[in-house]
Image (cartoon, rainbow, N blue to C red; front, top):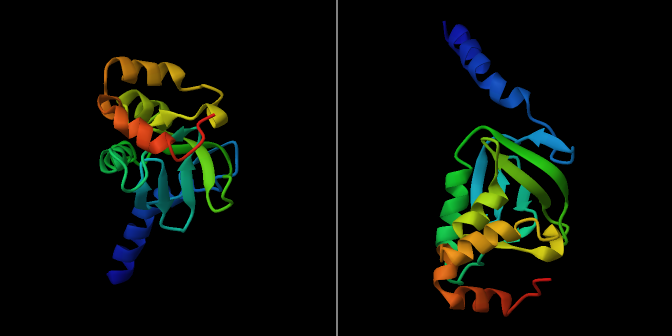
Length: 159
């Protein structure tokens, strides 16, 4: 009887893992369960793969809106339907930078639209400028506090 239960459990788990593949392909399913949301633009899979959302930036720890942006990413990734596109090693050489889709939605676009991330034209070519303008005009998220942008971009080059 325990063997039958074990086999049934394996059959139930198998479909989740059957579609797993490397994030280096042009479009691939996610790599299994997510173990850690680092901040609003970085998360880790339980297999150790580190993913950085390509083309956007979010507040770092200690900056205004860090916790809110982190929670927004966690909320968007609460699905098994996560796809990665255009993955490449990021500038630090430690993570895969990818376009991430959850339930068919562009996660980067959604974070920028919510005012939880900035478009980073240096890497996006302005891909998320319309979403950023929309959030700015509606004073959503980061855009309710002008200091959030000053603090963040005062320490980095945006373009």
